Image 1 (tube, rainbow, N blue to C red):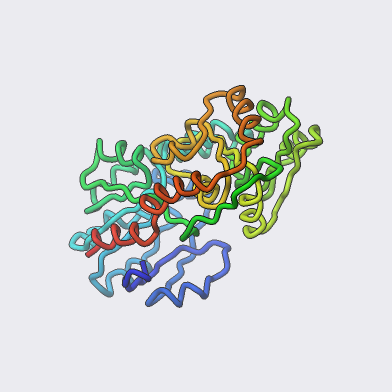
Image 2: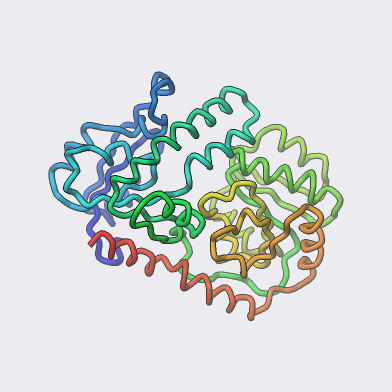
Length: 341
């Protein structure tokens, strides 16, 4: 958005991550607010992720000007209904259908207290979602999310996810392993990795690398039973990107169909063959670029088939036609700025 001429005053909540000085190069001002993480908020009627991102200091700063406000995610919408902002243009960028996302987190969470938390948040988020009526525009991240939101709210448009890739960076030829990557602290990614270990690669000899942050002990133990499956834990983003490029195929199942997964975009911009299940591509517009398998057996067959097929220049051109049009960061930034202006 900065490259498209926007002058941005950034307000963000801080809870452990270091201050990013590079933001000062692309924003007019950057203000940080302490996120109020307090167990007492778990017993309030508003979602914890929303209530802990409230700040009177933030409101005081917003009231110093009359600029349009872009709320990033439903979790940042505590002040969306504040009467002091009634005359301001307010736009919400949604990341997921949040209550669906939290319900699915609960389904795969093994710890009972975290499972109770996710279920409670899901119920609260579903009630809180109606605050979107106070937004002038809602920007959905996928066509599936747009359809859901448009059934209840006005002025819903779709702008796909922003991502680090400005151009296609795919290597032709063949690699010698399959790759799954994702944050292995998150339940849905743990579930996907366990699925690949126990139901897909369990009877194959094709090498699989699973890469991600802080894998749980039960995933590490499951991987250790198979000599052709390797775990790469807590490696750098640059190393993951290198493996995405070098792999013969990126295999990316998910059991959550909300929003869009950035790892899918990474695999399509940088990697060769991409094998997924239907939930990974539902409503994304990326179906034509992936090999879609609706069962573990189907996924096994396709992995065996494409493991021998070099990635051709024609396939790269096909990716360019779709990705550089729908997922162009510059074009999508312009769409948001048109709403703001």
